[in-house]
Length: 179
Image 1 (cartoon, rainbow, N blue to C red):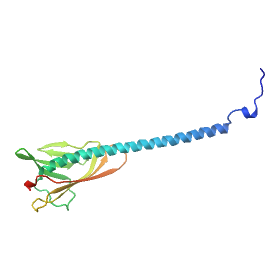
Image 2 (image 1 turned 30 degrees about the horizontal axis):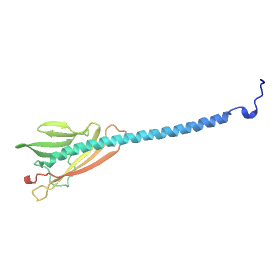
Image 3 (image 1 turned 90 degrees about the vertical axis):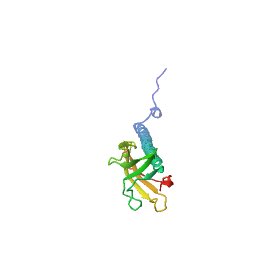
């Protein structure tokens, strides 16, 4: 078997061809990693939004359930002009008597429920209620049914983004015989 000389066409890849291939591969990998990073950010935002929604829904539903079978505690403004209130007091009927329940937001953004001297946090530490206003309208004595609008601003406690969700609901007590 004889050795034949390698011709110019059979030498393999040149240095320029190798560099072009490596550069092309690197650009594709960088693009794919960028897309993957954006997908992680979107997934985290979605998880944060879901946590906020679930917690706000729990807090507002708990408050609404008690407001529906309660009356406004004495001293509650019966107008919707002042919306800077951050506490709500209701008289919740329990058996033959009633218990005053106060909802408030701490400076740390935790919603608290005080009933019969016992204070408990009803919001998760995963979310921060930056604002919560109670707008009371209809005093019951003016022939209108009382309405309590609850306006909240909520953000995720663990998120690096400053996205704030604004939530509002209106609740009317069902016990019209008391007004």
